[in-house]
Amino acid sequence: MKQFPNISHIDPSSLGGLNHLGKFLNNAQFLSGAIPSNQDGSHDPWDHLEAVMGLTTLGYYDQALKGLHWMVANQNKDGSWYNLYQDEEPLELNKQTNYASYIAVTVWHFYLLTNDIDFLKNFWEPVKKGILFSLSFQHNNGAIIWNIDEYEKIDEDYLLTGCSSIAKSLECAIAICQVLELQSFELEWREAHSKLIMALENPAEIFDLKKDRSRFSMDWYYPILGGINSEQRINYLVEKINDSFWVKGLGIKCVADEPWITVAETSECSIAFKRIGEDKIALELLLNAIAIVDKKGIPYMGWQFHENIYWPEETPSWTSGACILAADANYQLTAGADLFIKQQFKPELGKR
Image (tube, rainbow, N blue to C red; front, side, top):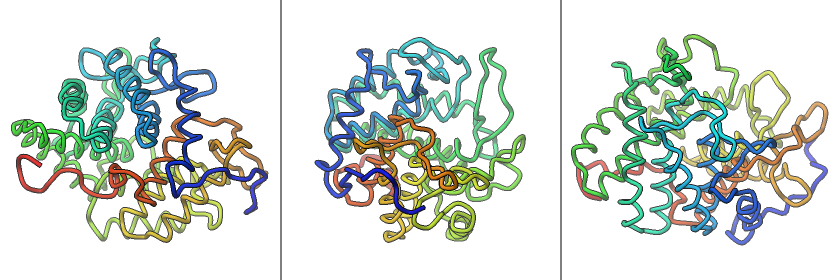
């Protein structure tokens, strides 16, 4: 089915056309600054930060700052965050490395839109702690352990999607180092980034060894978002996306073997295609994503195209965040539009 029951109220070509999503995120935010992503009011740090970037893109700077201050207030001493929260109460005590590092992307994104160097200085410490936590689990082959359980036991597995996210986080952290002229950290993190990118471009026998996650679309487009440059590897990933996940006229399936288009995956994949210069496909996917909405124009999680139903009938905050970021990437609406399109640090060592 290519005609959805609800009519989209999203105009992705202007910030004004997206502003109702900013109001939605603003209304969802708790007094503490937390932005719940699930129907029960819970959220994980990564989803929270995706929603924060949606607010930043649309100029809700005070609310975005509240969201970032929530991160600072709830950061563990080792630089990590817990896996799931109810406002400020931890619900799941395991720690994911890609959650710890993602604050660098959000802080850098805020700086790109505000050019506020005092802000960057103020948030350097939590960024540094988050990155150092993640890098403390980097293997010699470049890959990074994904999870530490509540008893501090390390899960000896390396997730392709998680490591791709960390690669982008490192990229933004290096850019922050260049602005703040922190050359020792820049040197250290450049080396870690280079090793991680090499692993992502040559992933055989490195990632997802405990569990095959290749049925998930994220495993195929996230390395592109993470910053790999190998043309051969990118072509291979794109071929897989086209063959197994892209349903023309609808969007990107979350998993290859389910008739389920998800808005966040479609939005993120749109950005991935934009990064490799496939502008027509990128825009098509964005328009697919923003068509799956409730009657107020708020994106649902997804569309089950065998049953022809919105499923589940939830409107996660991070899904709106992903849509906003994809619209910005496609229409170049703000100074942060190229966040996932271009490498964020300068090739030369030192100040930007």
